[in-house]
Length: 343
Image 1 (cartoon, rainbow, N blue to C red):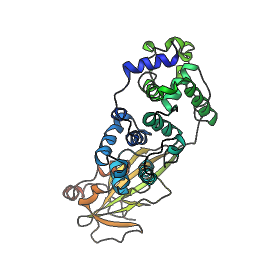
Image 2 (cartoon, helix red, strand yellow):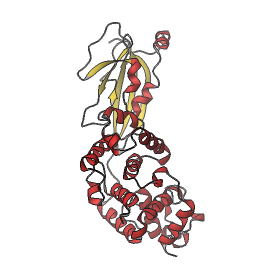
Image 3 (cartoon, helix red, strand yellow):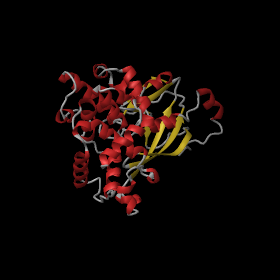
Image 4 (cartoon, one colour):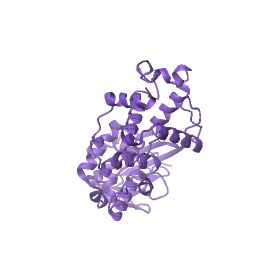
């Protein structure tokens, strides 16, 4: 049997049952693909289900407010995906419906070659192979390909191979099978080689190169960044700002980001580590309860603490806010807590 025949037979027995696979609605497929970028299925599935309940059609999503979409997205990270999602939904509505060609789908904000191929094959049966991390790994190991997967040459080589292996009439099945095989069988660590139906023809297994493949060229060095956040509490109010464009977490909200803590501020969390793609953040978090209402830096505004849950914040801020005591708790522990000393 051929590679493709064995793969599809495996999929018929072991493929994952996922709700977005039960429909050919392009909106459902597109939404799942955007959510699952940089996100595991177990984490992303509840978000997909909530989005589908709240905005069951692309028209409903297009009419949503950005703050509402960002709040619903909270916890998934990579918030540009949420902003692109809303922008693309409005593109689709302006077009009168989802594009039905790969080129048309690629014109949607936030949609690249992989996502276009996924939507095109799943919703419209277009004969386009998807190539993601799972596909790279399966093909690199089985065929012994050492071309770095994060190079232009590598992407072209693996895409061409996947396209050649795919039967045009079974594009959706082939793509889903490749993704599931990589996710559950040919996994990054501890792949299930002893029970793999492709073991006999797998180059990496035969040559003991499983740990070496796929090859990835080294990329940019990760940078570190130190942040100091001050949660101001004054008569049931606190201060936030919406993060501007051109930096991480665009459009999300955060407490006062300061150079240092003011006198009398209570340290709640210190050196909280948060890892992003190309940087590592270390954050200190203080509670400051001034006796007089302070002037706020430009861009910040007062809100009631009771309304805080209505603002979408980055995951790091969520982690910091978890350490925030209630006003009563803060009052009882102020005397013994470490504070910012006077200069």
